[in-house]
Image 1 (cartoon, rainbow, N blue to C red):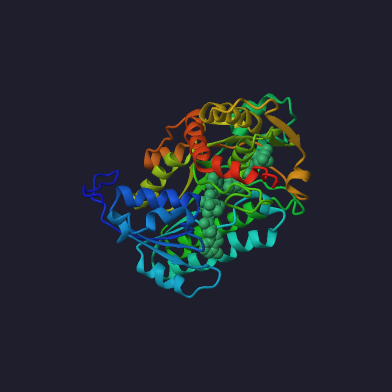
Image 2 (cartoon, helix red, strand yellow):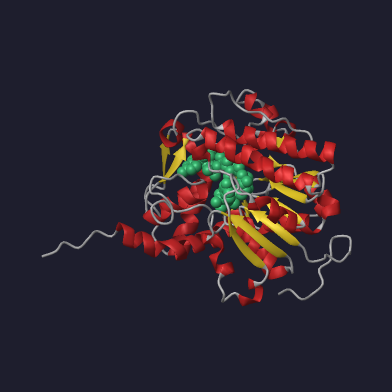
Length: 389
Ligand SMILES: NC(=O)c1ccc[n+]([C@@H]2O[C@H](COP(=O)([O-])OP(=O)(O)OC[C@H]3O[C@@H](n4cnc5c(N)ncnc54)[C@H](O)[C@@H]3O)[C@@H](O)[C@H]2O)c1
Ligand SMILES: O=c1ccn([C@@H]2O[C@H](COP(=O)(O)OP(=O)(O)O[C@H]3OC[C@@H](O)[C@H](O)[C@H]3O)[C@@H](O)[C@H]2O)c(=O)[nH]1
């Protein structure tokens, strides 16, 4: 238990609080639970349908914080216990969502329900009970950049005005309805507007987080090992799976899209600042990303192949990448964000937060974890059965 008094950015003592964390069993939730338990005195009411990624925090051996975390196996779609937990807490953090692109065009109804309809009661209970809410949205609400509509060789594409994504200035640009990829972004945009409107009309104290590709250990699953064989996780887990199996990394439509990746441990620092500085965080929408870690997906694949070879001791792949069409990989209705650079002005001003970890360093620690966690299991799963004599 953290014994020292915690102070906020203005030098005031931070009192211990109870946090209702919905989606606590996921990638971000597991890191946030770890951080809160190890560095603060806050209590966590952890809500999720799964708890595999936080099992290590719930076991009796982790005595030092066993009193400060309670797991509630609840599906927020239909469970009357949810309002009671929100009432018991000082703050609710909602992370629950379907948030893997392979689902957006293939399960658009589930995606829209999960990201909009299922989040509605959470917003309502917080508003009615005067409880603070930190709601997780996404950088996908920006959609495509303005620059993506300029001719390929236009010099204006280099001008930040045409690509920088700013919370209070950039438009949200999605593709047509038949491109169902945007079902997720659109649902997230509408729930952001609802949260914002609850703030404006009913005084809800809220913060909205827009994560820009947070990556690190425990992200998603490795198909056929701790997730379905035919499942398609987000890019970090897809490429990890390819590397663990010694097969080429698949570049969707040539891997030309650009992303900025931030290390989960850096990003979690930003969330803790939001939790403990309500006066600076309430009423704001925050980009949380690392503008210095920009690569194309192709460059990401090449870097991951190099880092993996270093940390695993396996020889580099002869053919590290292969191209695949988005239709073949994701199916009909896929579309993509071209480029994602977060404007950091607001988070710098309000919370003084900046990410620290370079892409190489974060890949080194993440791929070390992937190798340690999965290499043996993959070896066993792919071993040929010995012929019986
Ligand atoms: N990881 C990123 O880079 C990233 C980027 C943008 C946005 N986000 C947003 O952050 C949030 C968390 O993302 P993550 O990467 O940890 O995803 P995740 O899939 O690992 O975690 C989501 C968790 O929510 C739980 N959940 C979903 N529906 C539920 C329900 N009906 N009832 C109870 N629990 C439910 C899931 O079981 C899962 O454990 C999501 O809202 C996502 O849209 C994440
Ligand atoms: O094997 C793969 C997987 C993915 N990709 C590409 O890699 C890029 C990144 O893909 P990801 O699966 O990580 O997902 P995206 O960055 O497109 O969206 C994510 O962004 C923010 C969050 O809201 C969500 O977690 C998710 O929607 C895309 O261009 C995708 O087409 C590959 O080229 N090969």
